[in-house]
Length: 299
Length: 325
Image 1 (spheres, chains in turn blue, brown):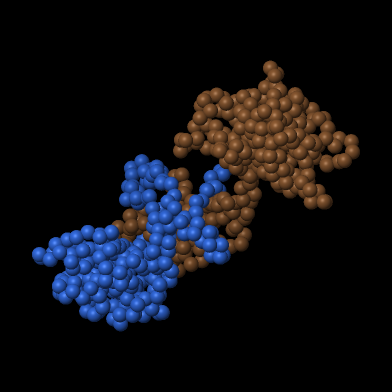
Image 2 (tube, helix red, strand yellow):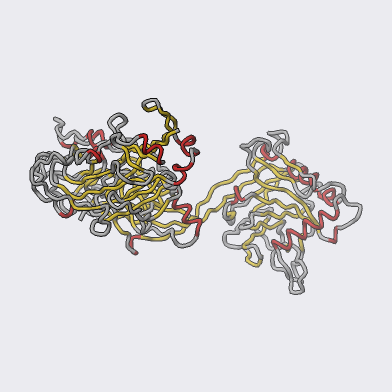
């Protein structure tokens, strides 16, 4: 008589993150675990060899041998890629997100640095006026903006098709360092509402379809497909568009530039800069996109 | 509807209490010898002596216990070294460990813990106190595990709380305590000291049969000198500590149709799932970590697996995530 397989129940010891410890120390009842998610940050799915001649048992042999790192206590450093629950098991494509650099000249990245510039004061905005991929972070008038499109990025499914409703991203989370700036609407310049700021001073903005219409909209099916203005080749879901307004500290001081950044010379003019990322995460699908930005200030 | 979170229901959360024990050996070579007393710290006030597990000027040294000595007014004499301090030490230890009687007077350490005024009413009037560090005792000393071997004259005697796991006292203001005997068959009325389990303090009578230099403890020796003498007689000391571990276990249940897809950037080529060649192939993902979140999606705790765990539509898993407090 063989033994029963007992591999289905696994005990793991958890460690508190810095946010968990902070909330526990507060003692105000905010430390309450309500849900869980699973992550696979270390996995490189490119190692999945589904044509291995030795058979299906060898498809994921390399993946299963992946060494796993110990947990980080920084809450932002864990579970960067999460597992997704979708009831259907017959999906061959999943939606992705991309910065739409094709929609107009105002949505293009700066080609030389492959990121967006964010000017932080009037003088810098004037100097860099007309430079591709420059967001006016001084007063948000004119200039570039960020547009993120979501959908199935494949030519194997027509762009004319609607994206299945359970794959449409309906809520986006934008994370930005509050020391550097804040998120504003592309059209009205209205400031987005911060949901919370964590212990690392990273602000999270939750922007939803139907509620935050200045930021999140459904992408209409183009009349001519494949549309040259779409970065996503297949069925389209929703879009997120926003600008960045530089913080008061960046507008009026060089302290953070000297502490977090460096200096660069552009066409004979010296600038301070800070490189950062704006992280966009689909709250529904867990898809994540880091958008590189360079906050820049003329010396 | 795609989702990355799963809510924990009330039956997914359980609380447990576990008692962990560690064996703590304090050998005579550490207490007196190995480090030429560089691990012994005396203070200008002379009220007690500290013992470290390494020369105390080193940053890697840990404080392990203190030794001090005191007596009641019955032994008080102005000619005694540090007479007032010895009285103060006894009273301080007694008021914390023994408490007060109905008149508000500090009670004396009682040999058998019953504070009877008739029969076996002997008190411990002059005592050596061993105050163990919280580092060693943790939440408490395990009852019945305390053993101290000292050299009395040329004879080794072992003092222990024999049988204390089933026979201890609860009439101390600082928790439970046991009676120390010199023989493994504990005989009522023959106790030579007390061990306070939660306080982490051993109280030993300074008398013949235990410390052969006991008379000089009272008179000519200072408290530090007494501590030096006690250490010189130290052969071995062992006990088990106890840590009370309160845990919450979160049962993270992964049903067959959950968590079979990934948002890992390498999971897709374009938008095509790289682990599938056709739509009917099983959806496969690999778990390496579990995050516990608040209702507002803040990551509060993380657990990692030792190796990737395969999840597909053909299996269900329950991952028990334990958070200790």
